[in-house]
Image 1 (cartoon, rainbow, N blue to C red):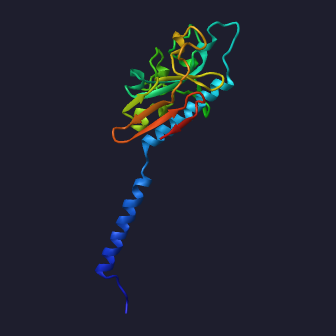
Image 2 (cartoon, helix red, strand yellow):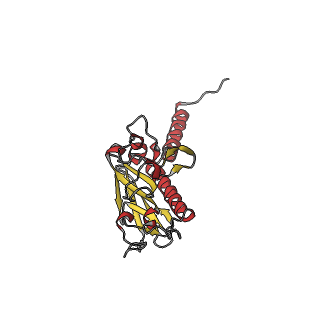
Image 3 (tube, helix red, strand yellow):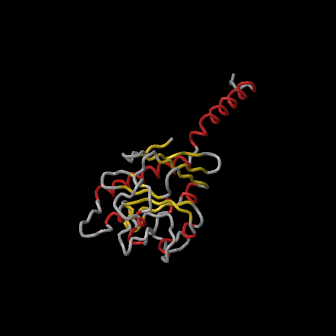
Length: 213
């Protein structure tokens, strides 16, 4: 005689499948805010690395310190009104604090790309809406990770000295390598949110160590 499932057994199997699906689905779904935080953490560390290996000290240049590597978060028309960030060294011209294309770090994985999610200059290469955009779309946090808001406990701009210590001010306006209160003295928190979830990227004072919570 051929055996078959009873209705009760079928219902039991369906209930078990439903429980397993409900338990595993949140783990399978991507946490975009977490992904964005991890990416920011990696790129802050990369900025610190550039500052340490490419020390900008030059005894023949009184403004050498303005050329330190930095990461700046902004929300501009060239980022299509979305939160994005740019990694650059302000070495060209008068060190205005505003990066141009050649000052922006190259993507170490693809030297045809600059490490920006869009920044306001006269160049279409830095406009994420342009067909000639040379930046990295994933650095545009709004478009890639749906980040709608960001809060900063110190500054939207962080640079690093040759020891990897974080600096919070706009180097373009400084008059010496270390203006008063230039070095970050308290941990700097960068909190990002998609409106439902949030993560905080924390840069520790003195060491520049970066963690997420």
